[in-house]
Length: 161
Image 1 (cartoon, rainbow, N blue to C red):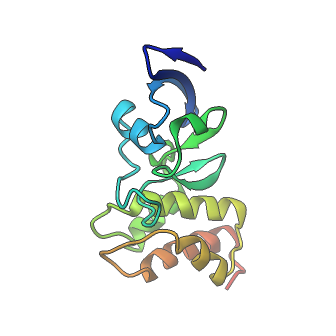
Image 2: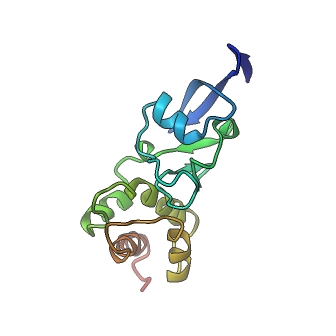
């Protein structure tokens, strides 16, 4: 990390398996840098205070609200955005179970649920609800989202009820 032109800092961020060089102000959020500098618009600005989860990304395979994280804090971490997930069973399950309506919150839900399935592939209903409660959908019920996540768990572990 080194100073660049006044109040900007040069950073290398690992995003979706690629190293990207960005110049940021120390106050820039990761959400801002992803969207405005790198064109990765899957993480959405919503409440901008960590309540809605529309900006969820994965940092070192854990869900993180990018509106609450400074870009400078993401140095030496592996960042995954919705653009970095390709053809996962979870994405197809969201389609198959109509687990979206307007789609604004969908990338955040998918990244959150993907992390859940990574860390708890046989999550209980209460674990799933706990993980998913950090994201808000204003258009549809959560039933379809839960069914999509459960369907992937059942694909991976067919004996799970």
